Image 1 (cartoon, rainbow, N blue to C red):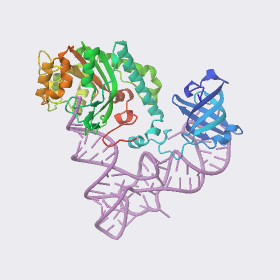
Image 2: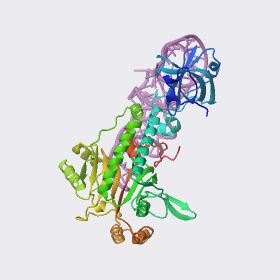
Image 3: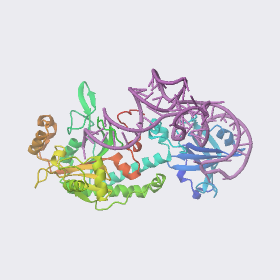
Image 4: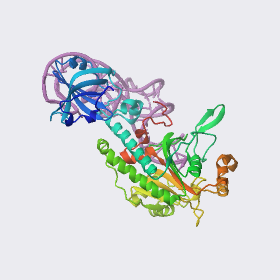
Length: 429
RNA sequence: GCCGCUGUAGUCUAGCGGUCUAGGAUGGGGGCCUGUCGAGCCCCUGACCCGGGUUCAAAUCCCGGCCGCGGCGCCA
């Protein structure tokens, strides 16, 4: 290893100890007879001091911002240092010298537009704010996984190259698969159902692709979907589970990332638990009362969700029991009213972050449902045939990671929370 | 895809018919400085998206294109 400690680990307990540190030159302050280098690594910042006359001084003369260096020095506490502790450098060497000027200010004295930042993303990801975002994401995904493991779910992986459209609706990206036409999966939906039909409780964290025109701060053509599917669950069981997961993710981020939240100047919203539920029907009534021209069967668009959010005064809520016609073919209808379905969306303010339902588990019902939507059951035979051999009742949901991240970071575009986002116009970096 | 707004040095921004030889900040180069922490001070460097038009005169007004942002649509 090139280093004995990481930046954050340098504290008073190491007083007078020799350490090796390595990282990026975050900022440089040259006072003539003394140089201050703020060194950054994956854990944070620490100040290095280089005195005139030391061996290191001449090398430090050559430093530029964002150069990668390794330094040997003695830790000393000093109330004048930023964290009350700093490292007096004895030796320093440059592992990789950064060219100047940088195309982006990593130290955040001048902020750049999102577009510029995405173009210069590798440098952008070095900014403290983006480091915080990446940490929060990791903590959130970890909390999601751990909660599911604790409830006996298995993490699974479904194919991402598929033969045909899974759900109908969304446009897919075609790929050439050994001379045959194939597509990138828009969702693991059908495969996760089949897995739930074999191993009961499964989840997957994986990318999905949609070739949609959608050009908004909430859509990407490639996104990470957090999917859960469980046999012997219905949509109420799934909503209970989801509530636990949301709670776990918020707690996990709060616990592990308080400094990151501070870096983002963001406080996690205080949600009501249990998460309030409102039916689709009641939502429509509320919207009507608010003077919106809507009727049963209409989709609740983003502008309408804003109205609903304001009327309800809730930041996180379920909209349940959607019209069957507004849902995909695998969604189970309600027993007492087949025009409605056992389905839900979880809404953060006016943003849908999760969508789920009880699924149809009978082949006859599925075939009928496909026909009603103008889809041909025979093209779904790869899926339907397994319903002949013992398919339990099951339910599940799909959660958009980057949308949840907006809730956990306070940022306003999913392009900002994804390291290398893919949208209609962006294919690099 | 539609509607609206926008495009000025590496980055962020001021200017919105002549006062622009385009101002500031940050960065970069050079100099001074041994406790900086958005270090400070001095000198220097670097820009009007592209193409047409209007006008005596265009960064500034008009048209087209491209890019970006916001909203909507598509999408779950």
